[in-house]
Image 1 (cartoon, rainbow, N blue to C red):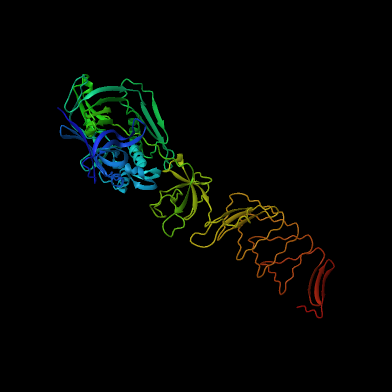
Image 2: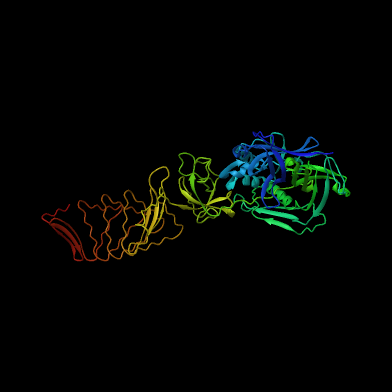
Length: 625
């Protein structure tokens, strides 16, 4: 006669009277939901207990403690489920027993109890998952990967639990997980291929005949399901580093059998910027979309069947079912009424399960998790190496520190290089205004993706104030820069106050103006120009100047005019030359003075006059040699 028993051992709790009344458990490859729509992560068992102890089970010693559920058949442990106690419920206390129920889950579920915002840089998915597990003190895990994940330049956990981030990242990389159970621990096994799941020795026996029996349990029912799904996939993405390159990956399913091949799946962005990553992501996504094309559901009392294990079925009437299968979901149920035998309970211990299988040579990809969206712009501060004022790269990108990132300092390692929106950007033309270290900026996110920040604005705050005091100067529009590694500024400002409209231009050092053709300046009132040092004008052709009023020129020292050809001056009225000392006229060959009426040369009372009547010489003494 076969016997069946259930036993629960809780680490640190000594109660020989503690017995299992019943349990039901849900298991899956990676995360899933139970029949009530409640999520679970690998497995979750609800176990009903009874104790004759007069001392209540202390919650502080139960919660988070390790525990082991064992299924014992004919005196031999045939199945183990190790985990931690997530919840404890104390029920009624009768004459003989106090009733409890506990929830047994993997230690992985501890990651659901920490929500975070943080940035990972230059790490691949395996390194990030390892960090998440290690931070929670989980060391019993291993990886079995065929594909080496690409290093991620920038990967953000944003307002999500460590567990949600774990699942999202793992599913994106095509990683699934299951558990291996031992007496004192359970090991998280993370894999990306079908061979990464353990294979049971021996066969599971199929027997659907009424009255059939097997001392070790057997499969009593199997139902095969086939359905049409997406038949191809196309993922596309964009990278500003290769703006003209079409990041596109197409893949057709190779197992459509007799299904129609007209169901394409398209998505953009595909979240890749390398062809190798895109190819892997397309394959992973298509395998997920088609994971339910061929499944089998059934029920049994075979205790060895656990989610994440491969096993072979034998003795099925349809030979195509006698093959290797992978259990992707299992629901366990066990009752042990004789645990309360002194209360008159009757009935044998019973165990049964229902399951979902997929072919053992197919990969069951985990459900992709939705990525948290940033539902609005964020504030950040521009950062850089110590002592730097401007820190940028060849694409005018900057480094940022977000106030929600608590793990790194405010330096050049706080973020990836982040692109900056300029008001105009073309091929070597447009505007260039690079945010400086210490500036507060507004950051948006492409597609709401926290992994794709972009600076879209800048803001003042209590420390970084506007260049002019407000609201007194509210009519000013200002563009003011600040001297790099020095004091000073350049500025272009506009005053729009009625009656005081003005444009100010300030250059801290030099002002260079290059005009490729004409320049026209019209001034309807005065013009004042002060040059505190030298002035140089270089005109390659002509200078034409028309002055309709007076022109006055005052030279504090010498004035020198040099012409490589002739100088002609034409005066409609008088021309007066008044020298305080001497006047010298020198002609290399000749000097010609010509007048229409007379020419007079006068010194004191002596003069020489030339007129049409002749030459007149007047003086106290006239000397002719």
